[in-house]
Length: 161
Image (cartoon, rainbow, N blue to C red; front, side, top):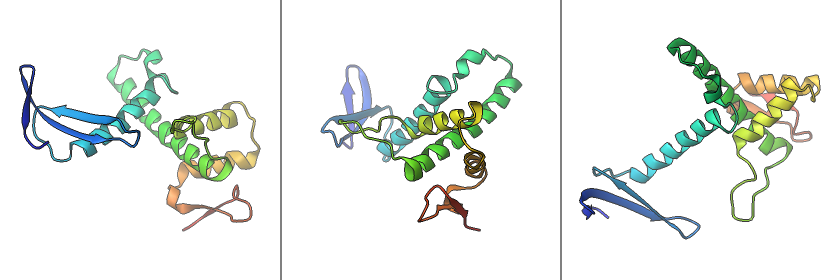
């Protein structure tokens, strides 16, 4: 769909693709953009981040902050907490128990939520051993490509330096 179309009284550029489910995804924009589907995919990742910040975990709106510098500090902390939760969810999915997939395709929950629940249980409710808490600290401090699991016992981590 490489040219403008008039829809109603608005001229738009259309892009589209057929999803794995067989549904059509059609994007409309006010200017031609060759990588519109790739940019839309990035936008969807950002939308998921905002959902995690607002209603699926951190409930940012309930803070009722209005001062710029306080909002800035909370956003910085939430960005760190989001990354830690997501990394923990990825690790738990790979090492402890893979997420089950629903009959229609998506996992039972997202990696962020999976990791956040594990962190909450470990750090706030004290349900884990000290070794598990240390493991969470390593997950927080080290990039994922530096952490490998032991082949005999996947819950034992090694750092590649």
